[in-house]
Length: 399
Image 1 (cartoon, rainbow, N blue to C red):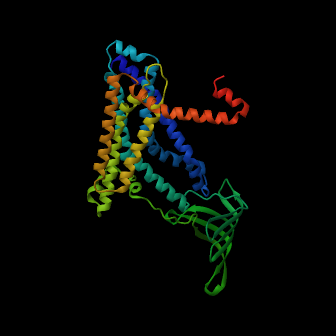
Image 2: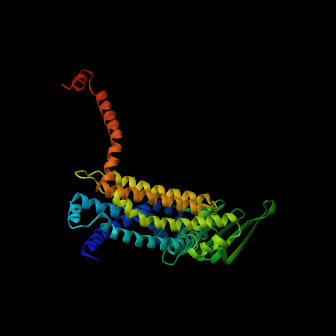
Image 3: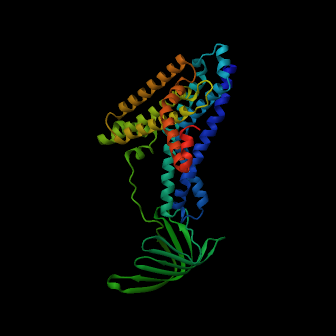
């Protein structure tokens, strides 16, 4: 790489890493409150929450890479234009196409990274997330309860303790009540029952059972193991897209050609198309960033940055909608959308090259002038309505 290429690569690295980290953190913070609601009965909720967030990072990173590539390339070229470095590059014979060499290589590298994430790392994270959710529901991660608190993990089940020894994990003065069974014990301990969920190991207690016809039977015990379900089983309704997100590329490829039903094959092929088309689109993102990120001379407008992010969001939503349709020709539709965006990027790049840097931004500014004038007159009319009546003619006549 030449000195110019290394210079551009260094300028790209910092905003790319910063934007990627910021997007992952924002998405994590947005979902942290929802995740905390799932950890009400977990013994160590902070540790489990950290695991949940770690398993979600590949999904968040897959979203952030698209935005990070666009923002980093657009910010770098915008800085070149505002600082006059474009003129320096042009004076030494470097064309815009030559300057795009490193960003295009950078976009290709990120596209390969995104393909690897979607092929292996993100499905593995989704599978571990499902397994962790099942462990939480079964109670394999412990039982958290405060002394004197009535815990109702599911309808018809109540759990109460008088005291808790945090060092040994022993409960004292337990009362467990279900629809047909009431158990009182001097002390007990929660143990992991594997697939059976949580088991209560109880000592020195009494059991009152309700039989048919309302007859009560009481008995005593010295030691007993009692299963207790922490959460009611909730049916999980996943769309074909969400099910396919949990498949590695090899499994998804086999499902695309060996699935039992035609709808499953179509959904798997649409999922494959989504992964490959999205990765290919990342390689095109530097072209959009160059066309939309460079402002015209003596201007600091940033309309192109907003339009570029809208284009990326529109592409992702369109591809996802095609995948949700699970049509037999979904991969062809996705490829057609990709080709349409590629033609748009090349048209923008050609206009930028022929008319000079900032041509696309200048066209956006010109197109937005009517809206700006309308907004200005709207604000002016509101200001006039707030002024006293005797002062309005002074503004309208220009005195």
